[in-house]
Image (cartoon, rainbow, N blue to C red; front, side, top):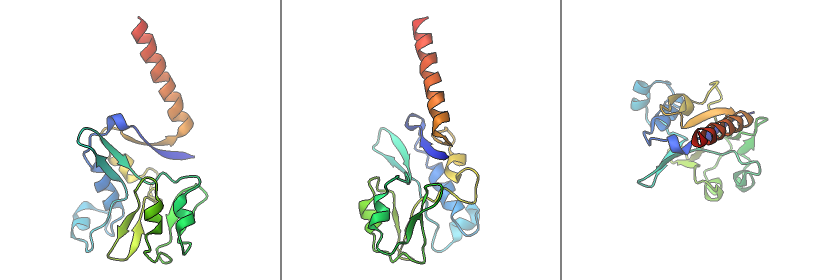
Length: 163
């Protein structure tokens, strides 16, 4: 199963991922129409910065997701891929999931009194944030494949430093 992975050292803090996410979750699915929508579409990835470094954060779809347990109405559920999704018709906006999320990435949609969280762009083969990232800080791939590539990078670094 593919996972959304972060290469923190590559994040430029440009927020292209946030913009692409908001556009993908807009009614018109285009930047021009999204700007004029009322209410404006919300992004589900959050680029967080401390002034020195930036990091794109989104739902990690925890295996034992505390938000699932905290959800009073059963609006949150995990699909066959392990993605935590929200049935907006059941969400009452109690914000319990928001309070227990260890990453702080569940947001409020105050206009509809519902939560907003990453759904991995189910209509796309690759999530919009990954496609929009100009530096490759966000990647969507099998964890085993990413681990293999990291091991090869370490091997090449070690070999180059000893030559």
